[in-house]
Image (cartoon, rainbow, N blue to C red):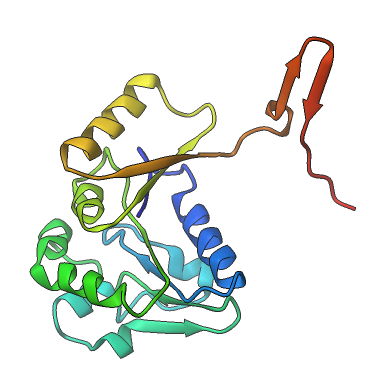
Length: 190
């Protein structure tokens, strides 16, 4: 699961790019937009949001209908589907847990983009079923209290946080020094 404390930290960006990198490495990847409230990955991938996760969990469509094969990026994708009136309850349905268990046997990696941790309980629900969680934080955006609360919410829910993705770091921040030597990493267009 890819999670973040609040909206606008780049969770979806990280999820899409992680899926693309793993697919380029020859892995079979499924990306799921698990933000059943405001998911928007489908727009970045040029796919309709309809006929997705919410319909599959509600048992109104089959998995084959929900999965979009995306040859251009070499991974599969499940959009949110119609925004349900009860996203948390839908994610708590046993059908979602069974789906994750079964789908993980068909793919090398299943990446779920979740809603913000502090906004709703959905990330904690999804995270309990995920084998690993990465929390995306944006440089200069969060207070220490917000980060502590996000971590506390996930840990109390039994979510296994495997790491932090520090997003949107200014290029000049990639400096480290020892004595008179300074090492700098930068990426420039050639």
